[in-house]
Image (cartoon, rainbow, N blue to C red; front, side, top):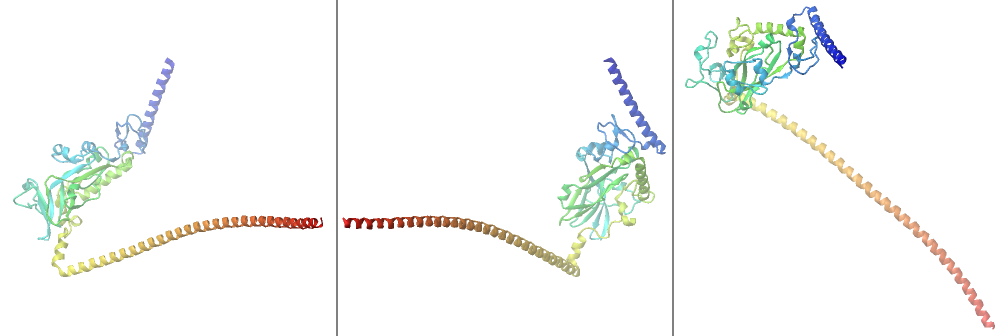
Amino acid sequence: MARNKKRRGTAKKTSGKKQNQDRNRGEDVLKDKGLETEFNCIRTNCASTIDCSCGIDCSGSSSCSGNRSGLLVGREIEKHKIIKCEDFEECKGECLQDASYDLRLGEGHYIYSEEKKTWEAIFIGDNLNECDDEIEPHFKRQYLDKKGVLTIPPFGCAFVQLHEDVDCCSIVMESKLIITGRFDLKLSMVRKGLVSQQATQVEPGYNGKLFCYLFNNTSGDVSLNYKSPVATIEFYYSSCQTICDPEVYRGIKKNIENKHFNKYNPAKNKCCNGTGISDVRFFSDGHGECSLPEHGGLSFFYSKFLNDNEYKNKAYEYVSKKIDENFNRIEKNIKSEVWERASFIVAIISLIVCILGLGFYGRYVSRLNAFNDNKANIEKQLTQYEAAINDLSHQLAILKVDQEAFSETLKKK
């Protein structure tokens, strides 16, 4: 027993030594490629293990960070400090969800003025005087008698800034995790008649404000309060390749640094912080491709439709044409569908008639065969009766002869 225990202990030591050798061999391979040690796998205390392309044995008590995949839960969002705002601790109870975060309305926005035919920079925060006056255009209050409320007019639009900063950059540089985000309006905003357009993705390495292009599709004002939840954002881990393959990670990191330096260079635009956008006025008229459209919202079309007869006639002709096209298409589809259904019904009726005909024919043949059988039996019986009658007639003739002979005999006596 002691010898067996000693052997098992020796085997365990040998196995552990072999794992260490495999791990060292993988690390040597990375060093031989001239890659820095910072690109090695991040180890986490995770019970599960997966296969990856890092070249290092990730088995044991630690496993490769490639195990991190899919949607981040709320505690991961908090752990990685992706959401940045001065009152995070106070608001996280309301905004931090199980697998998302509710973004709140910020302080600086653009409202399209139908009266002035231009975009106006509106400030609904607390300290208007602290805004950077060197950035054009200057913010102003939408209403002098109240603050903290953004009102989108009927059929109008607003380009709004969200309150929180989203930091997908620090985690790339510090933890070498590539995280992206996607956000959209909350259902409570949709119920108010708002429709939103926003960027498809919060890019890896982005650190700054987020923005929504809101449309008011109702005939009444829609008011939004400062720091009220208006959107929901979800975050996702990238694949294991960005963690375990140093070249992939290095390429992404370099692309982030070059792209963000050129796009969000604060020396060129004071509305940037080097890794993202810090002020909604980044989208003012002086920024070329980033500028807001000349006309905003549906109010432009609404007013033009009411006041411009030529435009109204064109719109009427266009709508009438579309209605006629749709009507003809629907009529054609209905006729086609009716014909198909009629053909199907005719085919079903024909099949039923054939089945019934076969049934009646079968019964007719069966009865005819039975009739022929009965006829044959009757004819056979008639033949038998005729033979019996003939036999009786013959016997009767014999009896008559015997009777005559007997009568002659009596006469002679």
